[in-house]
Amino acid sequence: MTFITRFAPSPTGPLHLGHAYSAIVAHDIATAQGGEFLLRIEDIDQSRSRTHWEEQIYDDLNWLGLIWPEPVMRQSERLDVYERALDRLWEQGLLYPCTCNRKDIAAAASAPQEGSPLHGPDGIIYPGTCRQNWATTDLPERPKEVPLRLNMAEATRQAANLFRSRATFIELGLGPNGETGLIEFTPDELEKTIGDVVLSRRGMGTSYHLSVVLDDAEQGITRVIRGQDLFEATRIHVLLQTLLGLPTPEYYHHNLIRDDAGKRLAKRDDARAISKYRQEGATPQDIRRMVGLDAALV
Image (cartoon, rainbow, N blue to C red; front, top):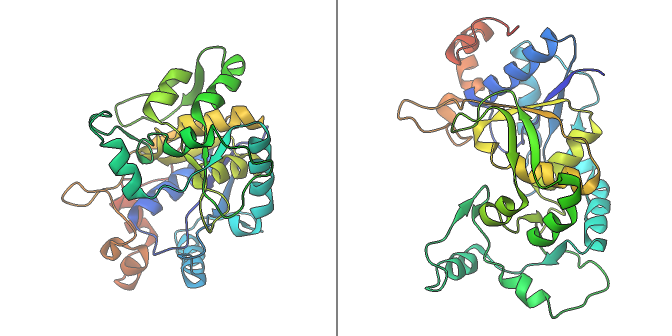
């Protein structure tokens, strides 16, 4: 089996030092294993994706000395794949339409009978407002252009036999609380700490959680390398892999690159953009030193 990693940025702004760190780690680990490093453009949010940012991604990564095979996978060219997966989940009775906005969710989750709202990988855990209404509704076909949520209780029920009471994935890096090795979680934990996540957003036809598991499977990714901020979301991805019959790769969650105040970098932080350092005369080796990767990983 070929060892394959990937770097999957969104073309919605400049790559910063945090992106450089993740891309270099994925590239160097694949190279050390005699495997492949792939690039994927996650451009499902067409309202924010821009061609010039995509071109800047290629330019910055080439400048860093990273190489990858062509053609590059672009999510905007795989919408039919996501549609088929949603149809499959819909036919399994695992999805329901949701018209709640963030204000509705915050209000419902903060109601006196609910107590303090709980937070999961996607923010406030959805209180199930539309799921409860959906119980009295019967639509034969999957509605289009309406956000769809995963019915977590039904999903974990259907996956229970495959999970054999506990689901697992291999963590080769570190979770935010030092988690490593064999990570186990139960269906009950998915319901209580994650809830009904959105799998299809308005105007996108999919969501990050759905597209990432389908794309990783299509590209044959054997080790997913990404930041610790996505560690908790891995449980969602393992569940979807189970429901869709997809393989679960190994995971390597790494530390986040932060600014002097300890805040993790974001695309709005142009001061840390790779392109800015390039304009100021930095070299690729300078970037490696800035992110603590003075030499290639082995």
